[in-house]
Image 1: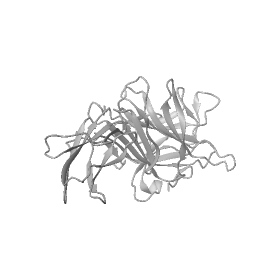
Image 2: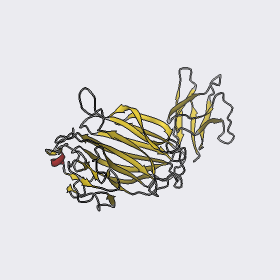
Image 3: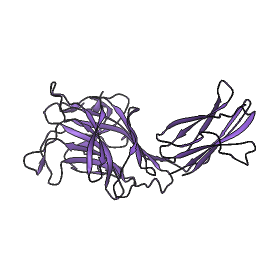
Image 4: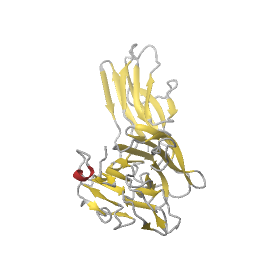
Length: 350
């Protein structure tokens, strides 16, 4: 649980080969492009206090000096075992702003996953949202994906402003920010987030196939749907941490945030190539059952050989294009069961 700090604040192609024979199974995986973590912080090296994110470790943002973001120590946020954590929001005051109704921080990474042949980018973060205490004003919190030119590509919003009509408590809805062909819109998902509870958001984007998946504490929110279909360049510039103020004043020169805020930690961006790892077992008849991880939009062909020189692709139902990123399987239908046969999966990117 998130606890108060102050009374008003939350205290390409890849081919894998497997040799199968009586009592023998050997998997060989094709070399993959180098990948790994592009950026990570747990905010342990940040100075704790208000207004300590902007200017540290290349983080930038808005509303510097107004106590609308910062870093809490474990003693301040009260969540045992996580050390320092950052926050955004949490200050019930009138803040001048003539251009928008948002507060944000972000850290640029500037990657082109496809050019690096590491077409999958994954963003993950641990976060929790504390509701307002000293005011009825509430705000929404977002993680928004931008390209290197600063254009929005998509995002996830955690809605803390929409109230249940009977309880007057936030419904805690989750929205997907998506391009609809002419503009961005917030699309309601069928999931909600937990109040004052740390959860892990994971966004996985394949920049080659233009599909993405989101999960919250390992529960899928959506899977392998179109990411961005507009005309701007699809690469990765940054993932913005944002508070969208839900209580604009009548005077449009001001924003009126509530004292709700979002605690966030373990902010991570990484890239990875799409690789295929093949495994094999025998079924009850002794036939070879192949299993591999597959990527939505990629095509897969089971091939076999007796000498590792000539490969055949004529097994019935041995090829398909994946519709989801998941584990696939195929059982060799040959009868009688071959005494020894070599297998591989030929993977073709779209």
